[in-house]
Image 1 (tube, rainbow, N blue to C red):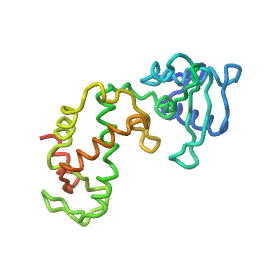
Image 2: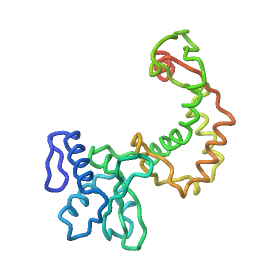
Image 3: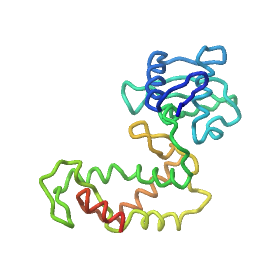
Image 4: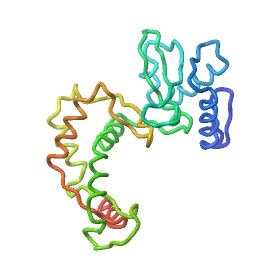
Length: 217
């Protein structure tokens, strides 16, 4: 199977990603207008985005590249729309031809992303010993932070009491792990969710095997 971005064809998704990464790095912080030699490539790249229409809005004025504010040494790709507004789009996702995600799936990922600092903190501050089988003295990555009451239950309880019209529908791309994250405009929703989650959740440490068995049960 071959993968194409404009006139460029690649044998693998990795090859496409590496080419795009090198191109953006070589271009650096630059404005890419319609007369730029790479303009068509960026249009084709954007066409791979699962929220292409939302990103384009009323239309593209030009693309531009800026330093990534949360990932030192990296770049992010931006769109200047014809109405004057600006928005980012993930060149990583586009170059890797990631499958479209439903709004429900992205909401779930963004909700997990919002609470991730607290799960990480819990893992760092607690004994790495499986609460079910007693396994210990294994590498850090062999253990997982598990919600005793399933995450999905906590999520659904929160959403049930939240006004549907205020639930986010469009998300940003987290530059560290390429998952969905809440936009700045949805800060209130994010804060409400984190506050609710942290008030009701209880964590436990599980080994990889027990965590998988619980997930599949």
